[in-house]
Length: 186
Image (cartoon, rainbow, N blue to C red; front, side, top):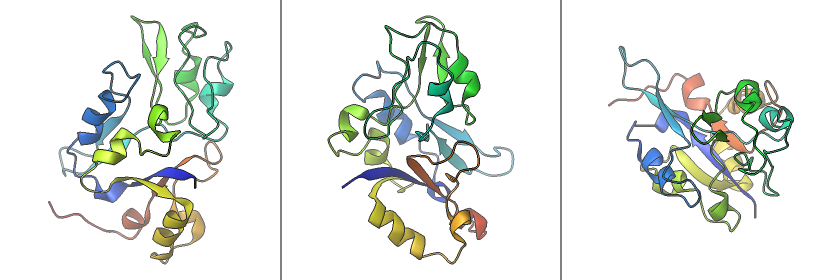
């Protein structure tokens, strides 16, 4: 049963446990590959996680002249391969979501690889396994469909990962709470 990372943006409490867990994932060299964005710190305490959406046809991989960015059979778009990356930074420019980062010391691009060492075996990525507010969840297509049926919104308004920027994505982000005006009380 294929599972996907599912994000409920309005649940984020800004605890940043996902960031701490990311550094502990195998192969990350203690480097954080996700981010938590303060939406408007002068007005509210609302935060949201930012991570690679693992596009089905990723601009980062298409723009790489060295073919250093590989797509795993699970759909995860992996960080640049050390032995192939030439440090051109095309991937960081091409990504419409601004996710890949470039490490000038290592001359290498890095980004979320969906904890491929875990997810290829059906184990949730580190960020989803520690999220206390269920902002980040590891769900099957059936579980995502059940969540979707709880909201009376048009299909194209239910998730942000629709074909507007990069076609489909392997990470689904729900928007009903935001579109329906759900406000969090902190």
